[in-house]
Length: 271
Ligand SMILES: C[S@@+](CC[C@H](N)C(=O)[O-])C[C@H]1O[C@@H](n2cnc3c(N)ncnc32)[C@H](O)[C@@H]1O
Image 1 (cartoon, rainbow, N blue to C red):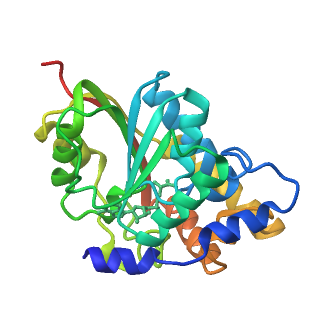
Image 2 (tube, rainbow, N blue to C red):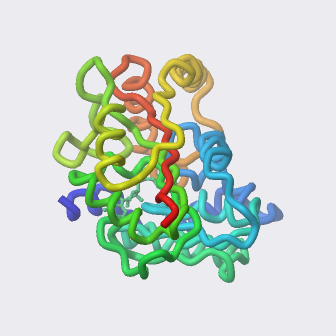
């Protein structure tokens, strides 16, 4: 399963494409890169919403599960004054994340590691807060991941999740940005997500099926992309032209109720 996931994401030269797209004279910062290095629907806007939920504090140590090419990690470190460690399964994404972190001059605040979120190398009770954006749909055993997140969080620490979930109207349109076929796509409903998190010991602070508010937004985005095309600096510049078709499939899946977006904040109880 993991090989299928890695092969699907795998790509070389990502960092160079991102830096070339910025062009000469543009300062390389988490904000100037943001339209290209947040690898999930609604990009930076969705990361801002996650940050509101996570509420990180200056000096805290955060963990980003499935950090991709590190855009959210760099952005949170820069805007909230925290240290962020990111872990990701795809070696090429980790290499790009490290190169871009060097380019933004954030190596003291952002640390990227190659590894599996199901089995991380971190000590128990290490992180103040943790988050994961658009990753659990690649995980066939979600409870194993949630137990790992519980283990590495400090007592009272919180985990914010932004998960693509199962919609009521059938399977997503494949290929999606996260999977070529159903073989590596594992979507849960809101109820299953609640059950899994409670089974792993978390207390639920907040959970929302964001579909009612997100659906009109993505429908608008779809119309704009169909008429005006993609903006110059978009994720497809970095991840490849083929990514545009995947984004269209993802947006249409939300529009047609085949997927949904579930936002979560859970706490490891104080011990
Ligand atoms: C859609 S991308 C999201 C990346 C990042 N969270 C973001 O929002 O910019 C999904 C990421 O999950 C990673 N991933 C999938 N399964 C994983 C696993 N078992 N352990 C670590 N990373 C994983 C992939 O390599 C990919 O980078």
